[in-house]
Image (cartoon, rainbow, N blue to C red; front, side, top):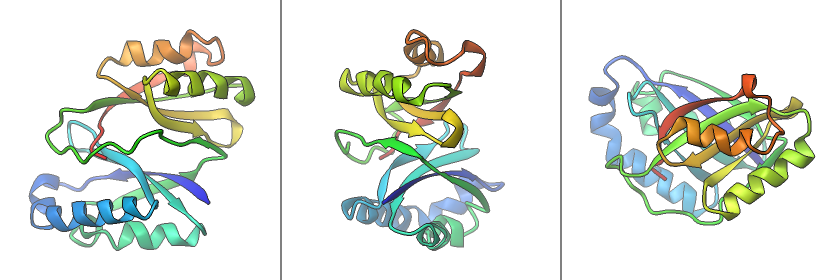
Amino acid sequence: MIVFHVAIETGDDYVAKRAPHREAHLQRLMALRARGVVIGGGPSPDGRRVDVFYRVDQPDDLRRLVEEDPYFTGGAWPRYTSRSFAQFLEPWEMPPLVTDGSRPAMVVEGVTADVEMASFALIEARGAGRMAFGGFFPGGETLAVMRGDDPVKAMDELRASGFWPEDTLRARPLLHVL
């Protein structure tokens, strides 16, 4: 299985364009999650970006999954990019669907020179309940969905391990919907 991060740019008037498709979109994502295809994701608080994490058998499956989504066919998601993880740490739990913004998270990204050792830091963060899931792209690029709404605290989790140079770390908010 291959895990992909899909970064979606939302269209102008995103909220209006998604409204007629929202129920079908959420039902579809929950059905895909029940089959183990969708791992999690959600929008940024400003609605300009969405991050969704998919698990597929073949890379070609991803395009269909994204482009058949009601938000994509309805014009709310006009553009996306994807990249596959070289190593991924699965979530230990699949939280319930939350659409009211009450489960904030931070997407922390950075680059490590030592993926093997850095993976222990992510495993520890996940075990302590501070990371939902995350992993490494080729070249040591890291993406971790950290629980909470404080970007400094989220980056400090990785910074404290010493495996990510401070100048590579950045954090951005995510509403962890599923």
